[in-house]
Amino acid sequence: MTHSLTGGALHTSRDTRAPAAPQPYWNPYLVGVLLGVVLLATYAVTGRGLGATAAFGAVDAWLASVVAPEHAAASVALAKYFNDGSPLLSWTLFLVAGAFVGALISGILGQRMQWTVERGPQVSDQRRLLLAFVGGFIAAYGAKIAKGCTSGQALTGGSILNVGSLVFMVAVFASAYGLAWFARKEWL
Amino acid sequence: MTLPLSSTMEFTVAVDLAVAFALGTGFGFSLERAGFGSARKLTAVFYLYDMAVVKVMFTAIVTAMTGLFLLAAVGMLDLAELYVEPTSLVAQAVGGLVFGAGFILGGYCPGTSIAAIATGRKDGIAFALGMLAGVLAYVELTPGIDGWIKANTQGEMTLPSVTGLSMGWFVLAFVAFLLFAGWGMKQLEQRFGHLRPGA
Image (tube, rainbow over all chains, first blue to last red; front, side):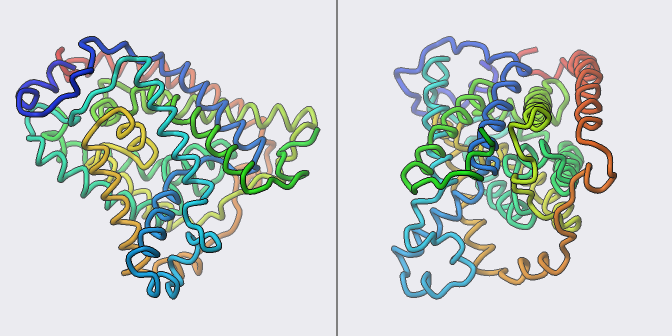
């Protein structure tokens, strides 16, 4: 914890309200049960599971409709995010908005609010931010190709034993473990 | 009562979105409680000194799977009413490999980047901006990929439907595997504990 802040801490503007001692995270198996119950409740109510990537598509469709309305209206590819003309009334976007609030509540209760950059000690803040952007771009492509991400494929599909979801999960971990050695300077 | 509720009743848009928001709150709360608002905690799984990502994901999957199976067994839930994303083996394999590269480089996945932003992580914001750019690039620049995937889709495929075995056997197998994996992950964390920050 303290390790990750050395070096960059003096130069970055940290939230003055950030408390000195964040509380420890919950036991992972306990959180797993909680997350599983949320997923089960989602299935029981909606008949579908969780997701996150579609929320980014909804925001893109909204941005496109503001910046280039004619192009956006004509785009076949964006159409699925248009949601009958109101892209922001997307189910997944509301789920993600709720997730933001839930994480905010947990972060405040756990005294983990911190205006900072998560990185290993060997990489600068700027480089880490660039890699985060590039990683997000690549992850978006992967999620679009696979028709889902860790939420929509791995968790949601995994719990109903969807073969494609299980293949996705194995591929994600195989790829990340295979590349971990090359990315070690970013994290270790 | 028959579950899922969506099979017997029609939600208004307002109710539908309120449900999404409420479920999302539990989703985000869980992610942050697990430490998944931190890219360092998430990527620790790939250096084997902290296996929390696998523990949480696997436990969540087994919990939901067991719940679905039991609710169906007592006749409260109709499994056939649940949406199953059609499988495209090549799409999920290739997409998963690409996604994994984005995960280890970016440090987050789409959902956890939201938990990171909510707790003030600037790299979470950068990841989410990358996601927005990536999704836009996909739909604008490479619309042909979707058609190709559609042409290479096997349709709905679950382990019970493919093997003909009851879901219950798989639930048992997953529970047993989780117990065994839990023991194995403990060994790994001890073996690679020296990589832990501050160790």
